[in-house]
Image 1 (cartoon, one colour):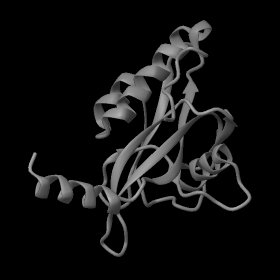
Image 2 (cartoon, helix red, strand yellow):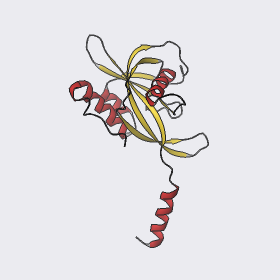
Image 3 (cartoon, helix red, strand yellow):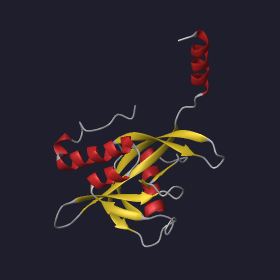
Image 4 (cartoon, helix red, strand yellow):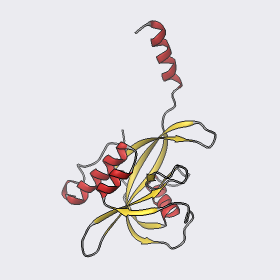
Length: 169
């Protein structure tokens, strides 16, 4: 590598911003008779791609509390949220000012117990309850796909749950 190329690379690294932090809920339910596990997907408001509820940090709230609140505001679901993350994923986001940033999303599992008829973002998104395999097919982010498959393994083999976690880095 030439000196000029190395210098250009070093300057680029100096100005690279760390990822912006967000928190998300991997919402699931277990179907009564069949015992089948379904996860909740919703569409993003801007691009219409399949995602999970997520949002920015909030003063006075823990990461998992933010995840639970976003699940309610975006999808109208409430339930029991785990305080430990199952893992994280990254995705590129275009901010309102046009700036492109990388977001790091810590994901918390939320077992859904109730679904509200009215909630903040009702009518702004599509929703679908699907299998973990189907969710992995629909989402664009490879790390989020891995989290759905990890969650499926965890639900299939609950004894191994503590060992099945993708490090948050």
